[in-house]
Length: 220
Image (cartoon, rainbow, N blue to C red):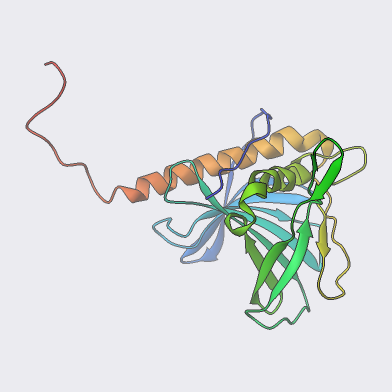
């Protein structure tokens, strides 16, 4: 799985617990802005189905969500990009090519190479998802950085997070990044969500107390 590269932000944020009212599903909100929200979604009492989600708040009837859940390797995350639009009515199982974040790379000093599009799979009538680990291996790190920079860094030209739909006739999407004065606090909130998620995964992976031993490699 691809390890998320963090951007050098530092600040602090208050974590707020918000139950959804469902018996086996709860949400914890770490950041709530006018453009994006960051929360941990826990769909199981044991924490096995939990993930951190960065999701648009002012892009309706469309939405973009980045969902990261722990992988089997410590410090690694399974990251999914989820696109949703009310009224799409797509057949489940279909796929679509989408160019995300307009990745480019300069080779041989003057040749510009574009990153390949991502393949999204339809998982409901109104939404489709793409797993970052399924993207072209040589571009995965650049894609991860481009996506999160597009969310947490607002340039003077606006957001760099573009979704250009190669198939069909869906117009390009360009969700607004977080407010410039909240870049640090929002990214710190995301780091805190991942940290809490890792601790939760570590706590549920043990499966009970450690056995005691009659021997020790340490001096008395």
